[in-house]
Image (cartoon, rainbow, N blue to C red; front, side, top):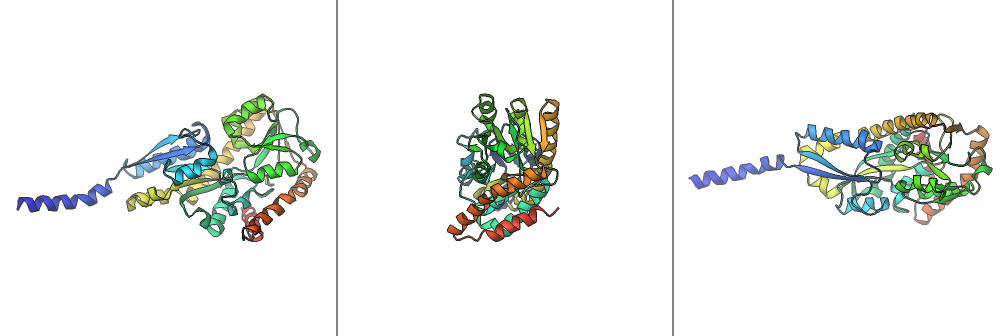
Length: 338
């Protein structure tokens, strides 16, 4: 009798053990720990996970590629379980996610909030199949990429000629080239030193990078579109989770992750990036930097000069059996919907 009671008690303990499962999420990304994305989005998210799970979900951060490798390898790190969650850019993995690149075409994204909502809607409608190997937690955009230079400003198309600029994505690099510049690929962590040593003249990059990378200390000139107008380029970013890690969670922990990611995390990222972009403007002004808006004539000339970038993208997709025209149209329509 006592033996039977013990067996029953042991069997009944299994649901309780499953419910009490503790999970540690290893979160990796490519920027320093002080970057706004970690401090103002992912750390608060982890705090919420811990509170809502009664302490059963906790996080460990591995910023600045502390797990090794390059930013382009973060996608494989999360797929292979080296990391449980990563924040990275699909554009770092050239050619791997062609449909989502529509938001990195020239002159699509005007700000982070509306652009991030748009790219999430676009992902759900047009690009889910590209990311079937992952649990997708969020998509967002950086708000658009301005031109940050050390030696001279950029106010007309001719000013692009010969400028060596760090570009963060394949299409960003092609846009720099179409406008007459020379794109240079490098990790964000190397950019400030490269500008200070004259290896590059500056960067086509988001305002959000200015403060954490201290670009205001090595650049003096900053050119951007007028408010509400689209930028020459943008970077799509994403938060991915290892699919097996997610699938093995008990249902209640899955529900907590689901309720705090998707559109809610996307909108949080968009709002934080817009706030950081505004803060970067203040820092640049305080450091004596010059910020100029594109004139209508300059913006129109850049759109005309960069049109071949989209034409080439459409051909590249066509070669892979993908009709890119409706994708580009969808991206532009969604990005202009406030």
